[in-house]
Length: 463
Image (cartoon, rainbow, N blue to C red; front, side, top):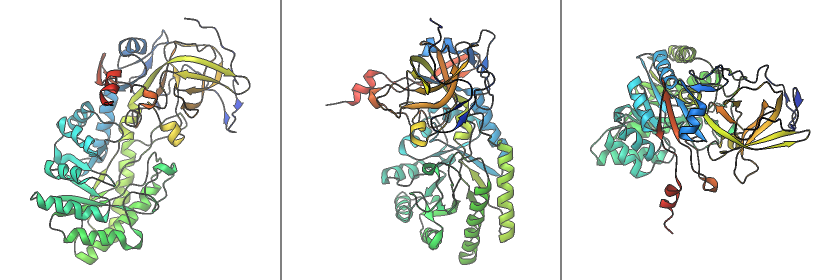
C-alpha cells in the first residue's frame, strides 16, 4: 500500500472557509478517552483495537463500513445510570437512539426499563424478552393499531401526546377490559440550548400538550374522568444533546406547578414525574458531558426543592437516557477511497459510507471526530473533510478535521461516538446497503444486526 504524501490543503493552524479558527491536536495518533469507547486502545504497532480485537481483523471479517459496539462499555454505562438514580427512580433507555434484540437483552440484564415510540420498536422489545410492564410507549401520532398492541401487551405506561390520544387510548383500553397507566406529555416553554430541530419543549413544535393557556390542565381533567385510564404522572422533555441542567430546573419548576394545581383542583397528588432525556455526550474533545451521578444528584435536588416549595410529596422520578448510554460506546469504521486536495482550502477524503450511515452531520450540522486507526503516522497534519460516496454535496461525515498528510487509499479511519441515531436513521440512499452492527466484548465479536444485501433490496421491489 502506498504511503506517499498527497499534496494537501492547509496545515497547522488555519482559518477555515467558514471563519472558524482551528488548530491541529498535539498528537494525531492520540485517542481522547472522552470521545472513544472504554476498551478502545492503540497498540504499539499503531493499530487500534476494541474489546481486544484490532480494527484490521474486524475489517477483514466484517467489512467496511461497519458500526462496532463496545458491549462492556454499553453495560457499564447502563449500570452507571441505574446506580446513580437508585431504586427510588426509574431509568428508561430511549430505544430510538439504537435498538436491537441484543440491546434489549443487555438492558433487561442490567435492570433498565425501555422507552419505545413505534410498533416496530415495541415488537423488537417484546421479541427479545423485555417485560411489557417495563416498557413506556411514546409518540406524537400513535396509530390505533399501535395503541391496541401496546395496551394488549400490558405496557407499563403510555405517554399521551394530544387530546385525541386521550380519548383514543381510553376507548381501546376499555374495549380490552383494561385500565391503562398513562402520563401526559406537556411542553413547558423551555428553550433548550441545542439545535432547533432537537429542542422539544418550546411551544411551536409537534410534541406534547402546551402548559401555556391551560391546555395541559384541561388534558388532566379529561384523563381523570375516563375509566380506561389511570393517570400516574406528567412527562416533560426539553431537547437533546444538552450539557446544562438549568433548563431542567425551569422545566421541573413548571411541571411541579402543574402537579400543585392538580392537587388543588382535584385533590390528587400524581405519583410520578418524567424529566425525559437529552443529556449530551462528547462528540469532540471540546464537549464536556456530566457523569450520571452528577446528573442524578442535580435533577433529584431540583425536584425535591420544587416539591418542598409546593408542599407536595416528592413523586417518583423517571429519566430517559438513550444517546448518553449507547452514543459513546460505538464507532464507525471506514476505508479510505479517493483523496482530493484543494489548494488553499482543504483535502477531501472520501470513504466507503457517508450520509446513508450517518445523516446527523447533514441534518443537524453535527460535529464528529475522526482518526487514522490502521496505523500511526508521523506526517504533518492536513485539514481534511471526510465525505461519503453519495450523489450529494452535503454528504459530509466530518466537516473539519485534521488527518495525517500521508493518508492513502486503503487506510482505515474511524469516527467515534456513532452509537446513537446513526444506524437508527440509516437509509438506502443511492441503494447503498446499510452497514452491520457488530458487538465486541472480551476478544469476541458477533454481528447483532447483519449487513444488508442486494437481495434484501430486491426482495422489497415487487414491480
